[in-house]
Amino acid sequence: MLKKSGFLCFVFTGFFILMPIFGLQAAEKTIVLKAGGISPPTSDVSIAAVQMTKFFEEQTNGKAKIEFYPASQLGSAPNQLENVQSGMQDIFLSSIAWVTRQVPDFTITQMPYAFRDEEHLTKFIEGPLGREYQQTLASKWNTRIISHNWWRLPRVLFTKRPVFKIEDIKGLKFRIAELPMYPKYVTAWGAVPTRIAWGEYYMALKQGVVDMGESCAENIYPMKLYEAAPYVIMINYAYDFQYVAINEKRFKSLPQDIQKALVDSANKAGALFTKNLSAQFEKDKAKMIEEGAAFIEISTKPFKDRMAGLVGTLEKENFWSKGLYETVQQIK
Image 1: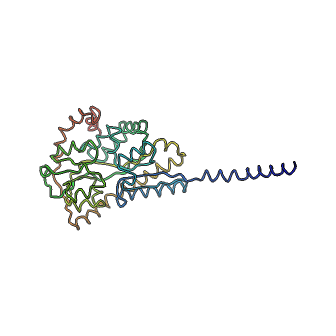
Image 2: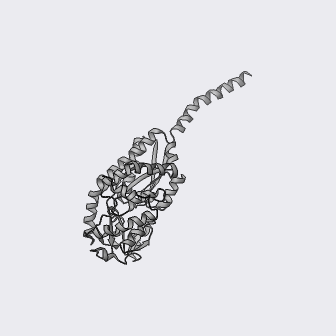
Image 3: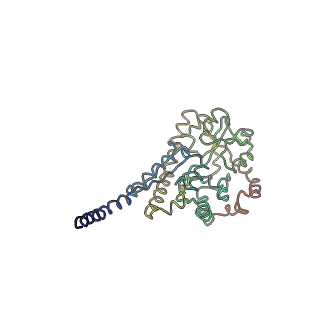
């Protein structure tokens, strides 16, 4: 009996000694967040995303890390956004354009010349309406925007032949994304909207499937789009930013210090991205010109004028809430 009691005492003593060790191992298990984007690894936004992962791991002292998958490795933009909503993917980095399906009023950000400049768009996003839309995205669609300070360069056109006036793009096949706004304004400008996936953009231009396209200016060099469409038309028709979004439930499940580190890292990377973008584009622009690209400045008035008649049509078709366009124009 004494031997048995001694044995039990040994077992229980050993158990309580080992408990803190096992508990410590569980507590130190690294939190891993899966993030995706659609831009190639060499793009400015993908480089900044990698920097975000470094900031995050440093700030958490290795307790948490982000695994980033660029170049649509986790699917197309719509697929990745759905993955975040369902919880299959933690984080998605992309243009605000991709949440317009969930919050239609965000479509106003895609309307050519709806915003005067970045400051105008910032006041909208950070104002009462923008905050309301972000709350809707989180509560209804399980997607929280944790950073939106990744400012991109204005959107421009690029074509396979020179363009000096709006009439020059009449009848040209214009690559568009899978977003409802694109065919509306492309048609109003006289071109023919043609849906092509982002990853197929270069080959579609190269093989003549499309004659032209559009993008934020910083994408043209890393995507090599200028090789197939060497005429860059600087009409600066829209301002855009990348956002960083995370599954709402996943975010709330994280310890508060990890939440803070994630938001801080995303904003820090966004500020760095924005700071470096213009200087990097000037370097890229010089390289493109050396390789035969031409940058053309033309009057934007005809492009703006054709949008005036489109506003009423889009409102009637419920692209956004009635009166939203006028409300946006009144933001000073």
